[in-house]
Length: 286
Image (cartoon, rainbow, N blue to C red; front, side, top):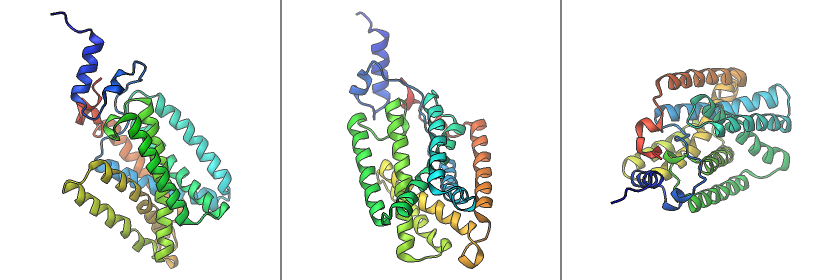
């Protein structure tokens, strides 16, 4: 019996080992396939993610308020930097820790600034910003799933999936900022106490995941909640003691966390401990 052409065998193999990929996706002849472009979700992932959200809050406040650069100018500056880094991220053929996490840091800053811009410049209430961001996130997820038939972060190996992924990340930062600030507005808690709310919610999601809750749902909910957690930690470290903080200031907090992020990223670059193709080799087999 005549053997199948090589291209057909490759497509059949990919469909067999990657259960979250559709036949329609495999049939696209022009799909740009790469190694998975996001890290494995380990403790390193969550540590850096929380550090990034803290930097997003403290660094935005430092440049906007302490340096007096202005909210609009700060938003334009970091948006331009984000575009440059995302171009590098999209051009890469595999996950590169330095580029990936720099993009997350910048998205955390931009997401914070965009929400602050709507609140401070246009007077949009935080409950409205929260509702709009939640609806927008649902729309992004809906379109992403309708096109790709998966929301798995273990198969971010085409340009469209990567675009959906980064758009989702940006919206989650905006949602987390608005929801977190709205919660503080409603409760009036101090920064230290307020950090316990998202931390407790994340702990409950972890328990739910361990008990069998959907991994994609629990992952993205936890991802959203890390934003107010990191922001509250940043406020707690940066504010003066008479305001309920430790008095490190926005610059001190930003430098401390940026240095920690750099150290962990260098460690991951050397050890490759968060490379998904090493943990899920079938997920990127094409």
